[in-house]
Image 1 (spheres, one colour):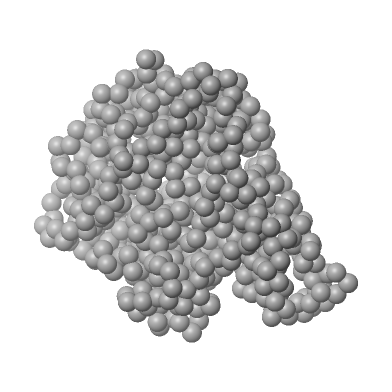
Image 2 (cartoon, one colour):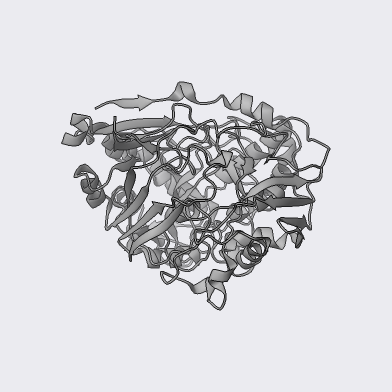
Amino acid sequence: MRSLFFARRLRPLALIFAVCVMPVQLASQPSHGIAMYGAPALPHDFVSLPYANPDAPKGGRISFGEVGSFDSLNPHIRKGSVPWQLRSLAYESLMGRSYGEPFTLYGLLAESVETDPNRTWVEFTLRKEASFSDGSPVTVEDVIWSYETLGTVGHPRYRGLWAKIETIEATGPRSVRITFNEANRELALIAGLRPILKKAQWQGKDFANSTLDEIPISSSPYVISDVDPGRSLTLRRNPEYWGKNVPFRRGTMNLDEIRMEFYGDSAVLFEAFKAGELNMMRENNAEKWETQYNFPAAERGDVIKSAIPHQRPTGMTGFVMNTRRAPFDDWRVRDAMIHAFNFEFINDTLTGGRQPRISSYFSNSVLGLQEGAATGKVAELLAPYAPDLLPGAMNGYTLPVADGSARNRKNIRAAMKLLQDAGYSVQDGKMIGPGGKQLSFEVLLRQGNQENQAIMDIYGQALERLGIAVQISATDDAQYTERTATYDFDMTYYRIGLSLSPGNEQMLYWGREGVDTPGRRNWMGMDVPAAEAMVDAILGATSQEDFIAASRALDRILISGRYFIPLYQWPYSNVAHAKQLRFPETLPIYGDWLGFLPGVWWWQDN
């Protein structure tokens, strides 16, 4: 059994930022790509993405498992539970994102992109050869219909862009222009990433309520070949795929078959992998990675362990508290919950203490907050909002650290003090609030996640010592999806992935519209004008210095808001896989992220 680590092959992020933050080009002319700042790193005649192998052989298969189930094949609507990989595997967009740069797009369905210096509009020209899996061409009519449909009846994540579009119109047989109604330089890039659907497939059908009844017709290299509802899904590489010679696609989508198997819990999934029913598995538990991957196939070398590093922000993974309802509408209660959470003991118990904790939303990257009080441009950005910010935003915030013992006495005392400050007191062993009722809340978990259940079992004991009543509810996928989409929870597990180029999507995460609008990513229900102002500053930044300062200021607001009980960070991905599954030596700065696995992997028998 061997473990592979490829840190030396990551492209230096500082160099990439320098390339992508060059002065904005003033000329308006069609281009092969578009970057958030400056010019794309790859020339117009590039052969392939730098982290793809253009000579990779075609063939083989990958099979991986998921905990849960699915009841829909439409990832573009709020209804239903969908295999999350379908959005990237079964659909294509006008442009494709390179994960070797912070935020740069290259032509995919579109052969070129054009915009004015201020990016008030963007125009895409379709490739002549672009076609759907049924052989019909991708048309401008399909493009316009896709934007309108997604923006009006699609998932809420698509509606933000639609609200910012003034007009969308054909400007030629293969070209479409989108004009925006606000100054926002990122919109041109976001527009290039919308999935393009086949209009004719959905004529006379209820797009917003589709489930398993419609197999998508798309332009992707893969088509869905087999569906066992709720249990498995198989995609096959389309031998007639139109874009095999497009530079963005060379060396990608190499595997003939992609199979997803669904299991009731993570333990059963792992046993299936050990038995060879699956040939790839990501492992998020460092202790398990070190101690339980010694089964026969791994010992024989048939299964290889690969540790894949990255330079993207940690994002936030942990237990989110819903501020829309008591008791978590009081930041002191949230702070008490964070103090009562004995991370050091839990980490030692479940991972052998091997995984570091997430310290902020953009940690592990140049965008993360710096220790201590805010200074320079960060302080200037926050100053107008300082009176309304929570303690720690201006002067510095760090998570409480326990001594590693099971009792966590110091932090439990701090939690008790915070609850007392919020008007609670212990009476007959119960934490009683100002209204005379015991402090209680529900923790909503997805059925089958044994690690989260184990964490909550330990955490629950600490809360009981504080006199807090906790109900842990594990629900199936459909109920979990519906409850979280409508914010019907007190506390639940949540993971927010953040990129090296935060932008408009940040409003979906932290914006006030997500407080009441179902289906947004603002699960915590935060309504903080300062956070929205920092997102505006990010979007309006025209220099690397301003962009980084605004991101660091936002990070301070988020972590000091005490919305999450943070868990582990993964500065690399642990991937166990069949020895025949290979990936390039040159890695994207995003590491094991969208577009990497299975995107640039291939099968090789020797």
